[in-house]
Image (tube, rainbow, N blue to C red; front, side, top):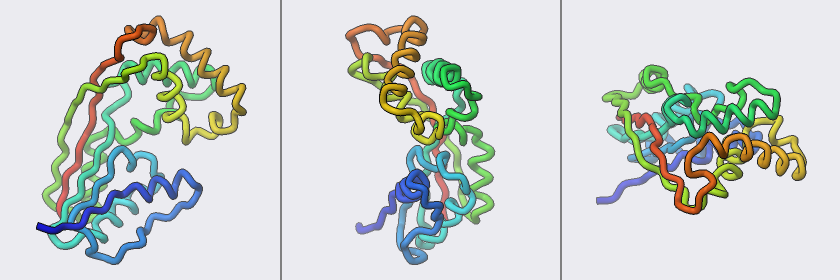
Length: 196
């Protein structure tokens, strides 16, 4: 069996690079499957992107989109984000973009409005493992804050100072962060499955 898969990473890459393009370079009906994993929440015009997913799918094609559930389901990330926002003097909402599309009804309505059929939203959880706990704070803070202008504008010494301050603040609050064993904890996502 032969089928075409579109991994919808280019929308997020364009957005982060400052190009606000929502139309893909592909003709209508080009793909059997569109996969967007942990990306849709970073795009400001989500309805346009979901409509574009439908446009590039062949009749009967399937879209699969994965987004994180609410920040309060992820206490480790909630602790990190609160520390970062405290040190940057920002509201929590300014740094929680990875969790910004956590409402299952909102996710479903995007697909309904774009003309998808057979829409199913599935709640899933998985255990994640970070083999080097000492790298968890720099990796998580840097990746979560990548789209935050206040973080992006910091020079290298300021970023290093921020990461050090956050690590010192959260280390006592996150069990295992100061250890040598892998850091393991659950993460929760919504998976949207829909047909064109």
